[in-house]
Each structure stands twice: as structure tokens, then as C-alpha cells.
Length: 366
Image (cartoon, rainbow, N blue to C red; front, side, top):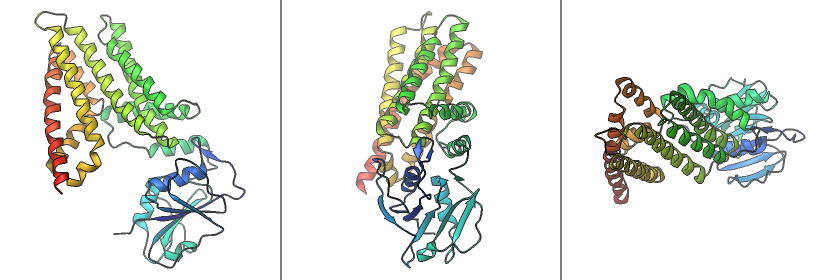
């Protein structure tokens, strides 16, 4: 197995032109990409290292690329190259022993090699197989589309992939040109989602259509906020919490809107069902939040409990379950869906809590 790349060199452009990519200065962006790809030591060639509160990796400066003759894998990012973490991981996987691997695309270059070989330029450049490698002089739309394609979220559901992401990417490119923060986009998405959920309980067809439109817009913004945060390197714990809490609030609004349409009829006591549904959703949110917070700890222990938690929590964190409404509508039995959600949410949070406690208990026993 190839050793991970721990050290990198970034060659600044001659004259240090003030280029920005997706609103982030190129040199800062490159350093942040390398840091998040696992680089522990970084040297800027031909320029003063930038001061940015988001940068935590050890930074140095040098007039030229020089490396010790050891067995450490090192990376050099050429001047004006726009890269992403996927390219770094691909370079690591492809690095040949005793030779230099250099990749080139449209004039942008990177190379990786063991020890002092990284300072040489021998060999014919190859084409990249994965990730982003483009010159910063490329048109902004080209760079932004390439970077957005690299932001695939493994937790996306079918609805996200088929609809929301297709709409969120052009929206995110527009948002990059505004001062709106990712958290502001999240809050706007929550507001639209709540409005859409409530509108589902409207007695008119127009109200229902407006509710569906608001829910689609909310889903698009729910994708755009993360894309905007990652492109700007503006992720935060608050943003992550807002995203999770917002999903829960919107889910509750959707179920509440459906309940509003149904629970006025005979045979379904309004208060108890709504109370049961609200308690179940809020308790489920608490358990999911705890699981997310403890994810790295519980995964250290492995076990079937973690596999079940991951397999169940991932689909529930998406909006795919909205599609379940369709067959109930066609069957004319939305009442079954509301009652099923009220009861099922109780079963879910209790079972998930038991699994989470067991998984964390195994971690403490290691």
C-alpha cells in the first residue's frame, strides 16, 4: 500500500496575480484543499505564505522545491493550478516507486514522487484520471462546474440526485456572487420548507401545488447551502446543526400539514395523534443528532449495531420518504401514513437509542 502524502509544495504564479476561484484566493484555496486531503506540512515556493484563519497546516516558504532523499511521498502543485482533494487521493494511489508521476491538463500541472525525486521534472506528463486539474485562467463557469461536480454527497437520496442537485448547482453558482452566507441559505430553505409543509394542509388544489413548489425549493436550497459552504471553505458546526435541525423541522411541518388535512374527520382524535407524532419526530432528531456527534467514536468499535444505524439513518436523513406520500394519495388513505408515521417514529427512536448505547458501550470497553 502506498504511503500517504504528508508534505506538499505549492508553486506561486509569477508576479502573484490576485486570482480567486469561487470567491477564495487561489493560493489559499490550494492550501486548504491540501490540508483537508491530509497534508501535514506545506511549503509555498516564490511567495509569502498567506495569513488566513481557516489554515491550520504548518506553512513554510522557500525559493525553490527541495526535499530530503528519503522515502516520503511528496506533492508539487504547479503555478496557477486549480485542484481538489480527489486529485490528491488519485495521485497518491498512482504514485510509482522510484519515478516521478506528473499530471497535466490544459497547462495546469502537478507531480508526486518519493524523496528528492519530487524536485525533478523527468518524464512525460499524463492525464488526470480523477478529480479537478484545471488552470486558474479557465473561465469561471468552467472552474465552478468542475468543482461542483466533485462535491458529490454520498448521503444524497434519489430525490436529491434526480432533482435537487440538478437545480442546486446553477443556483450555487449564482449565490457565489452574492454576500449570502451558507447559514442564511439554510434558514431560507427551512422557512420555505415549513411554508410548504403547512400549505399541504390547504383545502384548495392551488394551496397544495404552492406547498409542493415550496418543498422543492427548500430541497434545492438544502443542497445549495452545503455546496456554497464547501466551495467557500465556510463549513461550521453551527451550519451542520442548522442543516440537521432544519431537516427535522421541515419533516415535522410536512407531517403536520398532512395531519391537518385528515385529523378533522371522525375516528381520529386530533390531539393524541399530533402529540404522538411530534414527540416521535423530536425524539428521533435527538437520537440522530447524538449519533452524528458520536459517529467517529462509535465507528472505532465496528459491530452490527453500527451497520444497522448507518443503513437506517442514511435514508431517513434524506427527503426520499416524501415519495411515500404518492401511493397513499392514490389509494385515498393518507390517514394511514400519518398514523403510521406517529407510531413508527416511536419505534425508530427507541430502537436507534438502544443500538447507539450498545455501540458506544463497546467503544468504552476497548
